Image 1 (cartoon, helix red, strand yellow):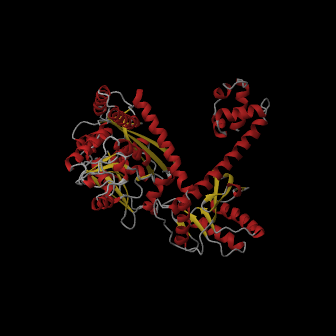
Image 2 (cartoon, one colour; image 1 turned 90 degrees about the vertical axis):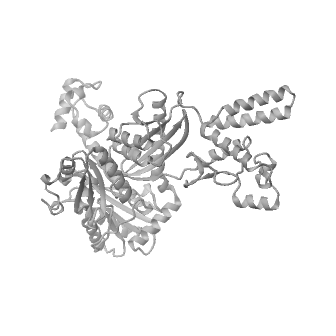
Image 3 (cartoon, one colour; image 1 turned 180 degrees about the horizontal axis):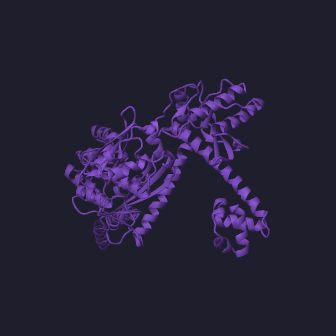
Length: 605
């Protein structure tokens, strides 16, 4: 047993009961909280050979120094305890939720003598009633503007109201009929509150009965030839119908449901939720999810539901619609039903309007995921903050406006390639990207030394020094990079390595890493650099493998360039061509069984 695994508990000491376990680091910080139906079975899965673990799981295991667990009676109790501890300790390797933006709400302040309607991005406890969240602030403004024509309640701030009350002069909204002017006594407190209640009732339920009442009054006024009054009622009807139309009916059966869709990509996932009440979409919301450990879609859905509801939330749906059922369906349904006080079901929509809305939610989630990844890369303020904070964290003399990042890639020690990506002002400068091919190298450290030696030589010739060099790796790679710089006569160039454990930054001759704040702009920038360099290196290696297999295929009698291209296009990659059976090869038009056998033998050898 290696030193990093010497503290692992004896397998026989781990119970086989349901429970919740916690991983701790050397500072007694909780790294991860998890639940298990069988603690022994779950925990021993972490004790496999490090190379058999997923990369992020391996980082957690290598960082931890101990585990403890708590046995519970049922899986449902494990679910509750896990959720409580995640909320309490916010462990870095658990799924982290952060809103991709602050959504606006329509609010009515019923605690005031004269309730006012307004837009807000925060919810506070009290008698204020909130509607939403809305996806756009302008949607709230349009809603308020339309309804004030029918329910002219106060919409001004307290200071504006006080000034009008002292001067006994109402504002412009009162003059154009969008405020009943309680500030100057044109309406009593009781009548104004009744207006506010009607406003609230219409927003919460799109109450069409009031539209019917107005239509009757309009017809009656028209019959009495009171055309101005009839026109007023007509305008109010149009305003209400315009607001009601914005809350489109998506389900015909007055369904009350929350629809969740998740889009995942590497380290990030995005969640989109549609809130449907009485068959109408009442709100939409999205989250960006930080993924530190590998997570399946059912697990992400489970954590999403845990973070979306609480016992204090009085707006539970009758059902929750998801792409896939959560990991612990029975326990999640029981927990939500207990919090709601009545039955709540979770199911996958398979057909009809609900499946259509789920697909729309997934489209929104995918869009949010793309936007979340692009937002920091294109936002000038975020990039400026990232560069400034990175300068402070690394103790640089100036902000690293030009950064070069290097990565090495190979396939079991063969086909060794490397990449250089360049970021200028925090953005990729793709015309400055470079690829390197290496004939041989003893290991990744030797390969990095070779690549950087070549780069530093050219750096001396063209005098185009970057402000910072980043290499993919920890101490050994940084040391190799530093030695290459010194050998080339470069002594004043900052060099750091980014490790794959907790995304630490390692500097030459420094035994302690720099740990950037989680979810910070500077950490995102460094991750973006590393991922871009890795992507570029992998792409180069694939091109080399593809070129190699193409040259092998072209040497086979009967295979010309057109058939080689057809083979690679059909199977999608050189690896898939190598893995193809004789039968799969012979299924391609123009390639018979004899030629397929020849191709298979050539690639196998």
